[in-house]
Amino acid sequence: AACPQRTHGTARELVLAAIAAGDGDSVPQGLLDRAGLTRDGRDAAGELLDRATVAAGVPEEFRRVEPDRSRNDRLMADPPRGAWCYGDVGRSKTGHACAWLRGWLEANPHGTALYATEDSMLGEVKGAFDRRDLDAEAVLARYVAADLLVLDDMGKARLSAWGISQVFRVIDGRWAARRPTVFTSQHGLAEWGEVAALSGAETAKACVSRVFGSCDLVRFDGVDERIGHVR
Image (cartoon, rainbow, N blue to C red; front, side, top):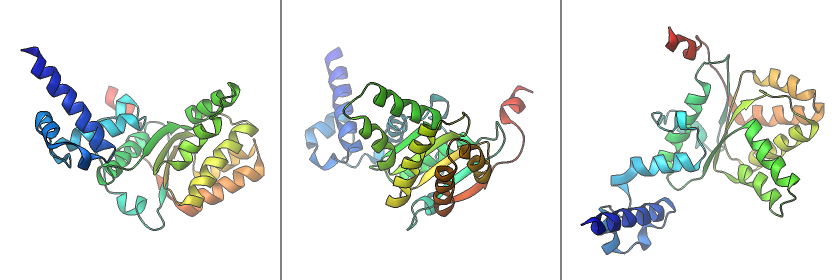
């Protein structure tokens, strides 16, 4: 009696993976019927969105935030406009950025989105270079190539000269390819540039110029929502 349940689960996994990869048209009708899904996946849109959110690296705390499509007209413009989200601690910058990411994924189910903090991105790249991986450049290229990138906590840690050079490579590559990026930071863009300039003045200036030319500046005010929830 358990076999049909396992078969159904396996079929569903196979079909969902195919639809998520944009290969729904190649799925046999019999497999679709066993999975209980339609070829375009419209009856599993929420499940596919959650899978894409996990694949993007969104932290567990923000994986089920309500998708917000309100910035799609900016993120999907020609040329696209990203966002530099800034404000004090606890102003829901990350939550909004992840909601925008999920809203973008809803509208672009076969697009690639990535989430990382500035520190985790640099840690991944440095780890690859330290191991002398043959594909170390591919690690950095993944952040450049994503259709949408959310880069969280900009300026939270002091950058080294190497660090600011890698941040520039990502910003410059995305700017040149016209791919939107959503940044979050406790610093306004100019203030972040001043902090980053301590690690490389000319590189920081180039970063600020490209971000300013491709992103809206979005200020988050209000109270610390984390502390407010405790009261």
